[in-house]
Length: 119
Ligand code: AMP
Ligand code: ZN
View 1 (cartoon, rainbow, N blue to C red):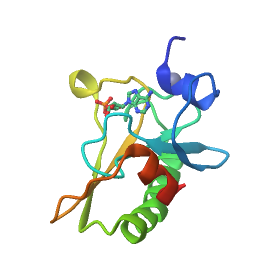
View 2: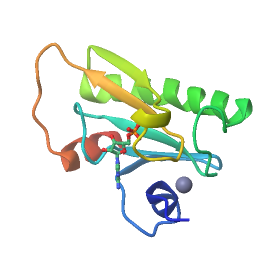
View 3: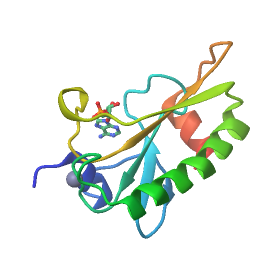
View 4: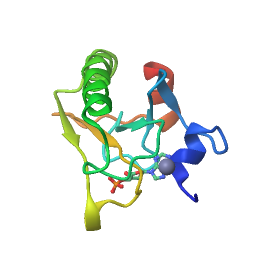
């Protein structure tokens, strides 16, 4: 299967990985909407919200809670939005949850600087 997120999970292509356990990984979005924009991705290939089982979904939400805390503490964001796209608005057809921090005052850091703070 030619899936970019499966390739990241299998270490065939690099990523800025900030979290990993038996079921999921989380890495920084390569084209971030804001500093610390993170994707939580199940290791098993589920296409979308219809495909994924509830147990894995709940685990992803547990990891979202944990990473929300870490991102808020390390990057001092003022807000954080969770987004999960399906169908025509979903670019990568491997289920993923976006964590998008918001800032009242725009901060400027490279992806590498953000990675060093969050890893
Ligand atoms: P979606 O529209 O929800 O499928 O969003 C897919 C997201 O994956 C986009 O925000 C992309 O910037 C991101 N993305 C695509 N390729 C990579 C990659 N190799 N590493 C990190 N993020 C990626
Ligand atoms: Zn995949």
